[in-house]
Image (tube, rainbow, N blue to C red; front, side, top):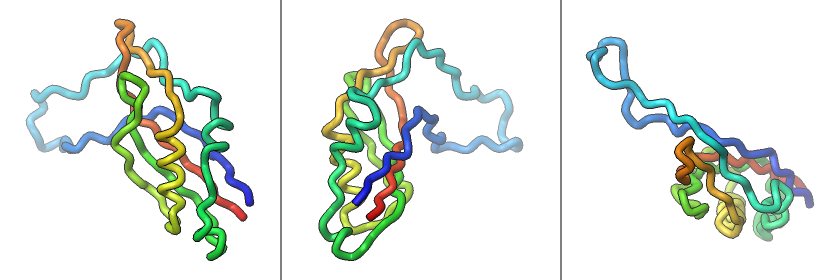
Length: 128
């Protein structure tokens, strides 16, 4: 069995409110944020990959595919707000979330050297 880690990257979470051209143009647009550093996964990608356990039920059913999880790295380095964007079932999404929760992140910093929240995407390929 092989679990291939596809990578992670800081991304912007889409705004829950959509602005159309027909709306009042005097409304404020989203503010740009200048960052000093982005979060760092302790041990790198291989540390996360090593924490992911291929679920037995997925192995028994020959389940392969890609799982993508969107989540937040908080100001203290903890993780929250897990959202499954791509799933294959049989416990694979839960295995990735558990590995993320058991990982350590050094939080990113804003320009003012304050810790900041980041939204990240992790995609993992499960392959037998």
